[in-house]
Image (cartoon, rainbow, N blue to C red; front, top):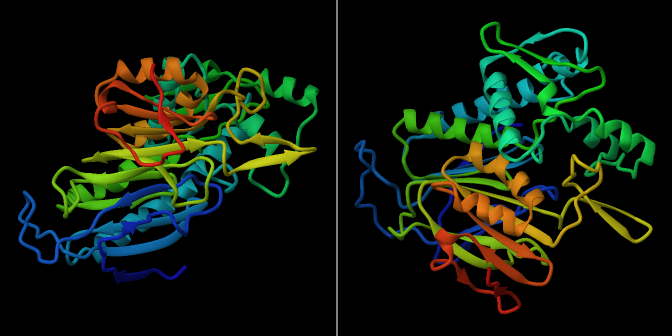
Length: 368
């Protein structure tokens, strides 16, 4: 696709970052206005622009948008686009010859040599699987392949198929050899699916590219996974991030939270699902049962120091449930979470209880 790059003027109205995102992705809303004049420079001496340079591409199975508040950054933004394309190919489950494709094809047969990026993602995924007692497990690919929710081939599998798939989900059977840079799935039929963490890794990679080129003020939107660099040019208290209303169309929010230098990742049951005989099956699978998890949660928004961490934790936090998830996040420095339950309650971690701004009268702040 030909890149389209242009200047976009921001007015004092809300900026909807995901207005054109794919239907598969939850929405994050960031509001704020740019200053009418540019007087600031960042610590590297690069002026902060009053209008962002923007680029939009269809990549990573969604619409990717980047907005950079500096002049003369077109080449850097193109470098980020090229990086995304490279990572998309490397980590794809469907592209023949990709690292993940070859790992899955050789399950139970032999180790596969992989690139450093793939090794880093898989190693971190195993760590998070251990932290979450297996609730986040990238060997869930065999199960997601069965359900195919979000595709034209989506279906409710037979119980026997689900049982067989669940028996093949086990992150402890992912063998990594960092010295020889190889990965092996120990049992035939196992399958990796990195969709729950790959966009987070890519988001962090784009931040590194920007930082290497002295960019400090930007918004990176990877469809449901957002990174804000620096603070809003119009407000030193931070970017004003809206938490999506799980029961409404894109752009409707429950409340807002100001953040600086953070990743915001949302997971929810409200957009990608399969409906059969009046029953909705959402896309967040429970690796313990083989079925979509049915709990009290409509959506969960994670605020994290990096995109890499936020992406993986969002799925695990959904599966943990509200009480355990908030306790888990409260034990981690730099992380916050906002849960929205099916009854309209908003449950907040300790660090944002006093700063979260509830804006929707149909919701209420739940007492923990």
